[in-house]
Length: 251
Image (cartoon, helix red, strand yellow):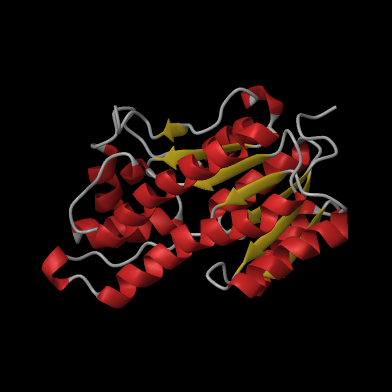
């Protein structure tokens, strides 16, 4: 018996490195997984890798009708929903506040905050006692850094949203938490680092390694194992928590 045997999960941003690493961890522990994202070829490839315990759908998390359709498709395909992972994200612009592009600020909040809100809103009617909702926030949802007003604001806002929903759903025995990764060795993070430092990829990664007490980036699988912990009964007495997986950056 795996830690998620018989359970069903939806993961937004499911085609990304953290999304797929999480999906693999969930399937290995007995879950069925529904991948939602914006790249049909990557979603299809991910589901093909995961096998018959998976399904997928192109979903813009800022669009309420699309998010509801994805949640409905999960329940139609698998008959239930137990784990909700709001993992979709964009990096947003990197700019001083006086020059920060307003459209990027609005879009970044829409993907991270509205996306998590809509996913939870449409999933909650299908959740039962013991269900788990997890938002992928960031170390900069606990701290901050210059020139990332959109991203950092969105990640802090996810914490406020999580705490509100956690308090609301606790009487139903549904847990809601945020996970806060530090720098992860993936394409998303490398683009962030290059924009933030103006250096090439290797040099930018080295600069960021110097900011991390453990001295290295995380592997996507390390983040996935923590999401698995929050999804499973191993964390049955955790709700309203901000769980840092950041190599010590927020300490």
